[in-house]
Image (cartoon, rainbow, N blue to C red; front, side, top):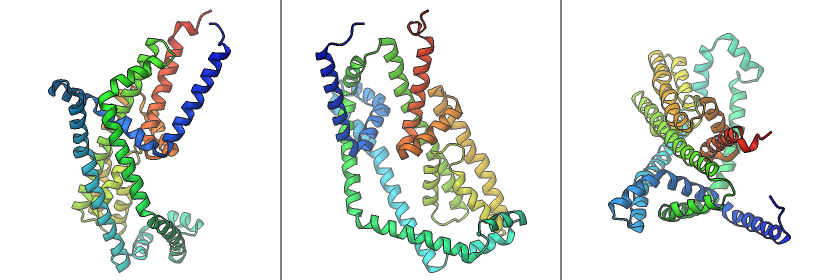
Length: 352
């Protein structure tokens, strides 16, 4: 391979600078662009099916797909968000009126704890109700200050959300319509041989589809099952806790248990033994099996990654990238495995 000429070096430098500048422009709405791309990849088969049914009318097929996404995804999420806000307000009112008392919960739980656990809590000065209330008051003060700051800018956050949603939907329309052409142009621009590009791009799309569909289906199942159990046990705000379980289920293995396990412990501590035992068994057997069975089938099987890699990449991705990380993490892990596998098996990299 001959070295680059001065003109080629200047052009590559210009290409890099312009690319970095363009990415910088997209950063403020990177989440909207990211989810526009993700939804385009997931719903591309639906678009192609509609394209055949509309006799190859790409604009109509893209519009119908976008309308389907709005009805199936955006509208339900909006309704759930409204329900969460209403139930959260109810919980706050119950706490303010004394119907939900932290001191009562604390006293009942401390009365049934074994001595070794009380000694452990005592080392952290958590066995005294006054100490606990001081810590809760301090935390509540900090939280209230943060909430107040955000409440002042609530209109700004709402506008940012609506703007991001509009950008994502607008971008999604064109990605559905022109996605195949754009993907072809990107593949042609990547300076790799055809077999490398085909495998890497295939891994990229497969992992995104498997991760999003798998994690979302698991989250919906666990949240619905958990919310149904809370409703049956007459726990306040079952929709709120069900959605929280669904959100936390993005953390494999332990997510939903962070919600139902403390409630089960409270039932046991307050003498509601059958409710506590029933919720524990239900949480381990029913809610837990959903995670243990569905996630490996929907995520690990399609991505061909071990369960522990899926777990570590999901948790690490969410730690670095927030909610978007439950997709970004496994994608990076899959590309890492695919790239090293290509390197290990490619003869041109192992010539004597």
